Image 1 (cartoon, one colour):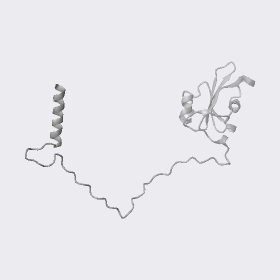
Image 2 (cartoon, one colour; image 1 turned 120 degrees about the vertical axis):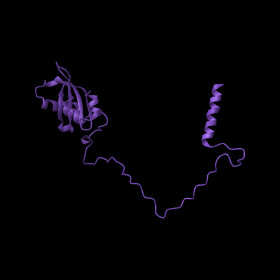
Image 3 (cartoon, one colour; image 1 turned 90 degrees about the vertical axis):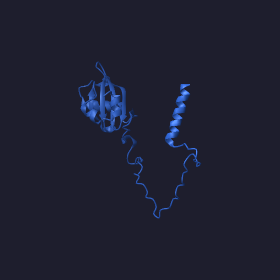
Image 4 (tube, helix red, strand yellow; image 1 turned 180 degrees about the horizontal axis):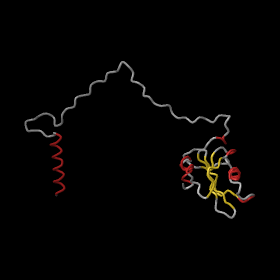
Length: 170
């Protein structure tokens, strides 16, 4: 019973506030009449075209650039698919760290994984902990940025793509 009384009170209050009541001598409509909108007049000058920036398009690779020199997306990490190969990463690591075991002492455990022009590779080293490699550049001329048990150097954290930092737990 209280709910019905509350609803009636709210509806009555709404009618009072909106002006939808009439007195006994008022014979006009309950709701006020709405005047029609004025007709639109056409402007003698056309409306200006909005300034919209040109759409970003991805240019097709030119015939002079081979697909192996094109960088990967910075937004995500993907397999490098031979750009570079694991052997190219091992060769670059051997140049940067000549004291590593020779022969089959280094093998690719994970990767290389690519994001932008960066690569992340994990190598197994005979009688040692895995070696985590951060490199960048073209497959034929890789630059080793870090090689060790912690790949997250200041340079890597400051310049490597975020997706690759997450993959390497930086």
